[in-house]
Image (cartoon, rainbow, N blue to C red; front, side):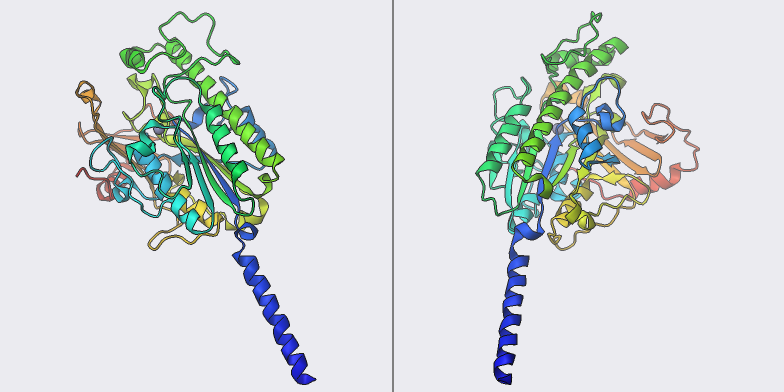
Length: 434
Ligand SMILES: [Zn+2]
């Protein structure tokens, strides 16, 4: 009898153990879905949740902030001021000196398979999908941004002229279609990459934010050559007109994010979905003589949005510590997303806070006629102070961006903070040309 009871107990314990193991092996039980929305060329200061009032660009995101627990995090700084290095950082969690991508073509233009976000999620049992609309990151460019994705729809990026037309709906349709076709028992990572706010800035029929009295050269859909021709001499009216069309593009993306969330709700997936909303870099709209990106490291190019919604069951796993001096660095998004999904970081990686924030650009244009656009700049931000060094001219500018958010008034070269930031800039591990 005793023998039988012992065996029964053992059997019961064994069954309980295997039930627990089965439980923990079932990824759906422990792992949230992750929707990572990356909007190309989106500066934070044009979004309603970041205090923008000129045009109501993002009503859907604001609704998520007001009613769905989407948290607005201030102070995310892009890894660089253009797509390739920033997206490489987002997809690997590595700084440009480590992932190596800084150039448009040739050596140092390809992402190596360095434990990409998609590869790690896939290894952890996730289905991985991406709808990529930037023409620089398509599969046919063989740049490696598709590593680890089961599904990588780059049909928008391979269009003849991807700068034209609104593509936000196509991106959303493709992502939602993929979600509807997968195994409902597996968790998923879906990256939706939107391109609309990238120039050219199209005129959208459903909103009209251009000043009706405006008489200048800016039109909806003005070509990038036209923008380049006028960029050095933008009046305040031209800048407002550029912003009006840029904002209409943001609004088109915002509408589609609302659609995606509605779809997740109606398919009973929203309660299990972490949403991260961010960008790769910002955009210059005629400030400082530029329209576009790559040329500077000023706030309009590197201060990007970061909004995150983590459902209650995973809140304790969410960890995004501020840099010691304040703000967030783009390298931190990878460990934060891995952590919330319960995925172990690859050896040598850390989720700990950086001591300060660093940004860099080394953009060498491919076309000879654009040689004047060759820029090499580095930035360090520590607390409210930012130092930018221009390697080509040898000049430096120090700003107190808390007191001067647009960084219009450089501080004196006798400022007591200068030496500390110069030391950070001198010793940081920057990307080096091959
Ligand atoms: Zn970009």
